[in-house]
Length: 158
Image 1 (cartoon, helix red, strand yellow):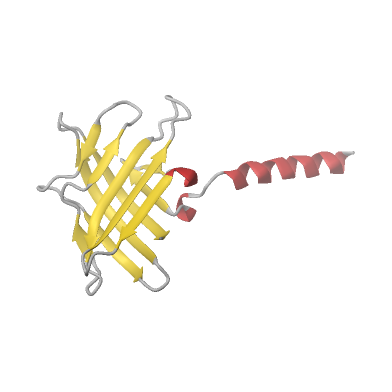
Image 2: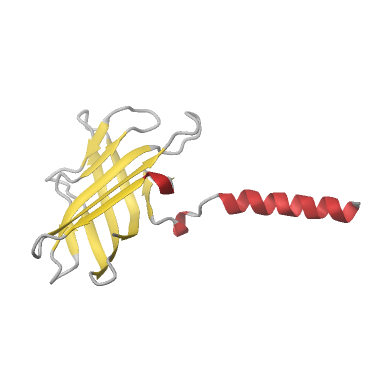
């Protein structure tokens, strides 16, 4: 009987840890003021639009709130930018990073021309239709409050 109890405890512990998505395994993620922001898989919307050397990327991900007291950021983060397919690398975000909602504020944050932030395309495979990027940006609300996004990453197919 003792062995069965230990097995049940081990299985329960494994199932609890296997349900939690690891930050490093997420296909779209960033640190928002140092806290993990990882949208739910079913709530990531990605598009890649080919436009004669000025291709467009748009990724939007939503993380739903589970608790107002959790301290984890939740809301919707959208990033849009152009890609020069002949010369991939780092591009500025300008006004193209937007975040709606946060635990304490129901307001929009946006990148600015003065502090545009960057997206670095690390891999672009037009044949297999896959793009991998890193991003960092500080985004601002109308009242000058800010959110700093670091360790940003996405790896998406289209």
